[in-house]
Image (cartoon, rainbow, N blue to C red; front, side, top):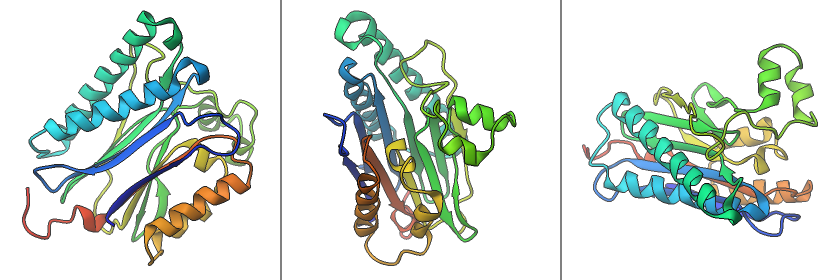
Length: 253
């Protein structure tokens, strides 16, 4: 299997507010992976995350091709703002949806490019010849405190305000998604995940993805089980794509 998405409710939450997908374009050799972590609890966080994933996947399938980074950038910015507008609109029209929102992290992979977009604290990691590293930066209060030198990265791991976001889909009209275009050279796998995973499984433990030689399903399930063994207070979602999925083996566009 070249790509997979898995999600788990965890051990505490009454339902799963995460959504996600890994899919190949119907006409070209490019892939979309997306993970969205809904917020709002009884206020329909699951609705917001599903809107994000469904709208992004539908728009991706309608796109003829991605020719360069500018093309990916333009598409990411357009679809993220469309999704944000839709979540805000539904929140204003339906009382039961007021206050809902979602994080979004997504990757478009082509034979020659990787493009990543991020809003919130769901993350993208890349395994390549140089090791395993986080490709995105969290939109969180604690991460801003680390950047400002007010706390250390170690202090951030257990900070009481760790889950306060500085940006998310559906929270305000104007948002500024972060875009990344890492090198494809030497990339072996890409991992996207919600904070239900990263709050319980450390980066060194996730780095096993770099050298793992068996089927990815086994490692993914191991991480989910580990997060649940350590409390499982949140929903747990992750997507993995192997580079071999989008390598230009046959000269496809």
